[in-house]
View 1 (cartoon, rainbow, N blue to C red):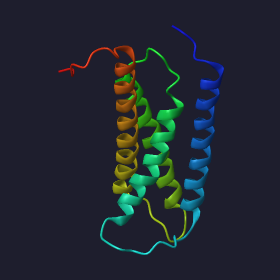
View 2 (view 1 turned 90 degrees about the horizontal axis):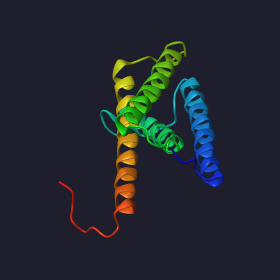
View 3 (view 1 turned 180 degrees about the vertical axis):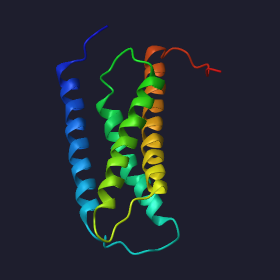
View 4 (view 1 turned 60 degrees about the vertical axis):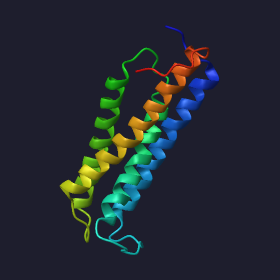
Length: 142
């Protein structure tokens, strides 16, 4: 197994640091009694949760791309668990904030957003590595 270049490893550490800062931002937002967002439609908060935790899933996926030779399915499961566990801690935290409540459906939106972002990023990486390893083949795989 080949080790990644130092500049590549540094880039992945940057994504890890960004993930920690994003988690801190989510924690800070969860600490507010209310957020200054207008209510436009039913279910808007679930989409907001999905997008916020989708960004976290994306940062996690980008930060774990250094792991070479690992099964993508295993990596995806680990990413989903990380995002879901942070979502669970966020919901527990919100339970103790006056004016906020913990919701199972918010946790589902958190995990779904993280899953979709990580899935599409890992899928994109798989396509890129497939094209990179066989640039002379124009036949689509079945």
